[in-house]
Image 1 (cartoon, rainbow, N blue to C red):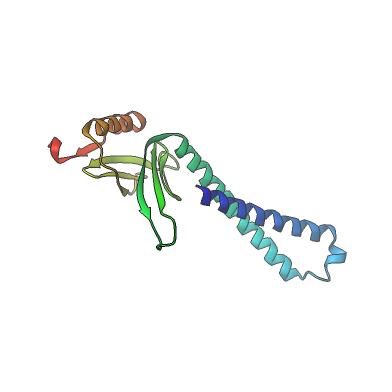
Image 2: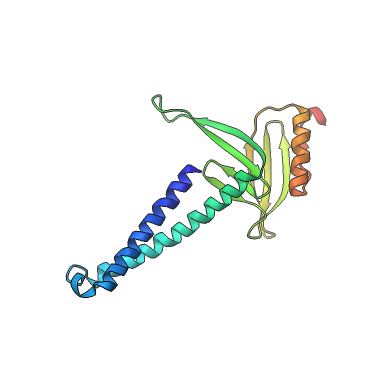
Length: 175
């Protein structure tokens, strides 16, 4: 989530700088017109609009991430990534919420913009979500840590209570 905050901040700063340049050109047109050409001003306007749109999208993603992080159903570490022997190990956290799934920086939204959870399967070592609008379905499979059967039943009830969907259990010991 820190990376998303950083991207939002950078886009906001670039947008503000572009707006300041455009305003200063409009206020001091006579003095600055020697240094600015119309093409340069057009490039600044387009860059400011693009960074503004990116800022709004990044801010919306940040709000969605906070919504998911603030309402977790299930939260766990899904991986440890090590780029090389000198870097630190990076743990990737997965958060499952009624509003979606957050995996590191990747955001999958549910119950917004017409995207609904259609089915959930809990397997021996994974949780699979089937989601999308009425026309199509995507799925995402998350490897989960080993848990005992009591914890799986609690997770199943928590998911059913939050989403209204009873997950299908695909466990060998329960067949």
